[in-house]
Structures are given as structure tokens and as C-alpha cells.
Image (cartoon, rainbow, N blue to C red; front, side, top):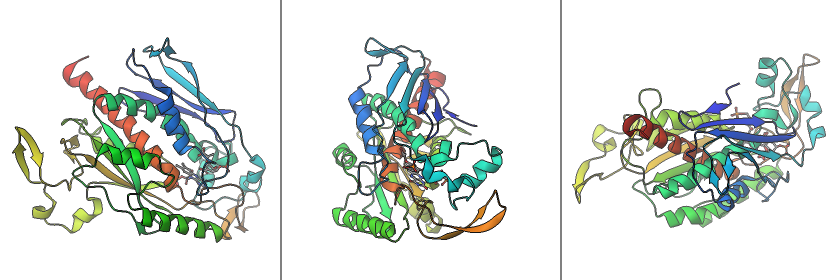
Length: 366
Ligand SMILES: Cc1cc2nc3c(=O)[nH]c(=O)nc-3n(C[C@H](O)[C@H](O)[C@H](O)COP(=O)(O)O)c2cc1C
Ligand SMILES: C=C(O[C@@H]1CC(C(=O)O)=C[C@@H](OP(=O)(O)O)[C@H]1O)C(=O)O
């Protein structure tokens, strides 16, 4: 399996949703960093299940135990290792799903690839639960970036086709990001947020689910982040985004809309402001040539509707080798967008810190 990510900062993730524990090992964190663990816990609580009527009722506190790499109030330069014990598994919910493959989930692909040896309970290693250690690692990166003047925020750009206001492409106030981070469904337009919540609960009532889009923005990036050709800023962010379960697309700046624009509309005209190069617009989302251009980084990911639904669906029983019908019970997110927002934000922080450290390593030395 490919459980390690990063060029200079390496994140290795382990665990299964219904196993003993999940966790991670982070290599490459500079020594001497004092981590604010309350801030890390805050990000973990934003993602944790069981905290909102819009989320799965599985109750996990997601309290983490630091196993190594932190001594006397600072990182040591050694691997930082962490584990979270799983506490609220209902594995009997999955007894039928051992054989009846859930359409839209990883049951069938996982079973074939790992010859039936994979832990199918709760989706095993494919579960959205594995984004808890990712959020942990990103939350550490986020506070290191904040000291460098880089701040990150995200919101639900859409849920079930209901749109929020988009971010101002030229940047938002960091206060807005802070406000969004305290909301159970982070949106700029409260009325649309209420309509989104209604749509989520209505779908759930019908034994169904909904999807949506998350827009993420990073402010304060210096010009020059990203290592073209293959480790460009867009490539690394896309690699990370597609590692998050249920993400089906990512686009930067105006994304797909660029296809219908003319060069004269899509280019971001440049000029000097107080001796600094600035652009008048930000259709390119802060990246040119795979390198940050000093504008806010802006990207959008699409989250598919949750696969596990109560509505009856056609599927296959792999032990009997026959077609069957399946209605899925148990505890599931009726919409993944709400809990994926802190995941996307913190995962983006991990990518950006890795690129920042990589740039320093290659271009300036350390
Ligand atoms: C935070 C989070 C929570 C999720 N919750 C659920 C869930 O409750 N039920 C479900 O079927 N899928 C859930 N998923 C998505 C599945 O894990 C995912 O669809 C599955 O692993 C297949 O991967 P793919 O959709 O990327 O192909 C969640 C994903 C994330 C990121
Ligand atoms: C536990 C979490 O979310 C889980 C993600 C998930 C899935 O299929 O991805 C399915 C559900 O698992 P279970 O059936 O064990 O309750 C969610 O609750 C979490 O995010 O921490």
C-alpha cells in the first residue's frame, strides 16, 4: 500500500476503522518547535464523528497519544508518532457487508486487490476515519505555517446543488476563516447554509445521501512554492486531495470555467504596487507553471454523495457469486462535506509546509 506522503516532510498513516487504533508517524519536522496541542485538538474535534446531527452518530473523541518525537515542550527532530484508540466500533453492522459489496464504497476493489484479507469492518483502511491522523499531521503543519504568515480556510461551496458565495479570488480576511472554522457547516451565506442543512436531513430521511464541493484558500504564500515538473504545487495538492476518501475532482482557480473563457478573460493582468508585482485578477488560483505566484491559492474539490445509504440497491454477493439487493443500515454521514472541510484544510497545510521546507532545502540550504 502507499501509506507515505511527502518530499521533505514524510507522513505515514496506519490503522483501520474497527481495529485497535489508527495513527501516524511524521518524519522531517524541524527540531525545537513548540506545538500548541489545544489547537491540534480543536482541529481534531472539527472532524470527529458524533458531534452533529449532520454527521455519523459514531462517537469517537479522537484523543491522541504522542508516542515519540516530543520532549520537554518541543519537537526533537526524531519521528513524531501518534496513535488514537478506536472506541465505538459496531462491527456487527458489517456482517452482511463481508459478502454483499456496497456500491460506491471500496468493498469490492479492496476485496479483489487484497485477496479477501482486508479488514472490511467499517471500511477498514479505506474508511474516512483514516483522515483523523491526516488532520492531526495537518494541524501541526497549519500552526507552523501560521508563524510564517500563511493561513488557510475552507467552506462548503455547495451541498446538494445549493451554492454558497465563493471566496473573493483576491483574498479574504483571516477573520472569516476563523469564523468558518467554528461552524458545523462552514458557509459564508447563512441562508444558503440553512437550506443545505435541510437538504442533508431530507436526503437522510429518504435513506439517501448528498455530495457537494469544498473551496479552500491559502493566504500569504511566498512566490516560488512548488517543484516542477512532477512535484508542482498543483500536482502535490491534487495527489493529497485524491488521497482523501470520497474526493472525485480538484480544480484550481476558475477550474473548468476556464475552458469557455478567452485568453483575454483568463489571464491575470500584472502591475507593480508599492514595488511589488501584483495581479488585478486571480483566475489561475495563485499558481502558474506549478509554482505559487504570490496570489491567494484557491482550489475546489468535489465530494461525492456518501456511498452507504438505506435505499435498496442492486449489488453482488461475492460468496454466493450471485446478484442481490442491499439496503445499508448502521451509522453513516448523510453528507461528507461538513466533516471533510477540516480534513481538506489541514491536508492542504501539510502539502504547503512540505513544499516550503523542500524549497528551502533545495534552493537556499538549511
Ligand atoms: C470524513 C469522511 C467521512 C466519511 N464517512 C462515510 C460514511 O459515513 N459512509 C460511507 O459510506 N462513506 C464515508 N466516507 C467516504 C468513504 O470512505 C469512501 O467513499 C470510500 O472509502 C471509497 O473511496 P472513494 O469514494 O474515494 O472511491 C467518508 C469520507 C470522509 C473523508
Ligand atoms: C468513524 C468515522 O467515520 C466513519 C467513516 C465511514 C466510512 O465508510 O468512511 C463509515 C462510518 O463508520 P462506522 O460504520 O464504523 O460508524 C463512519 O462513522 C470517522 O470519520 O472517524
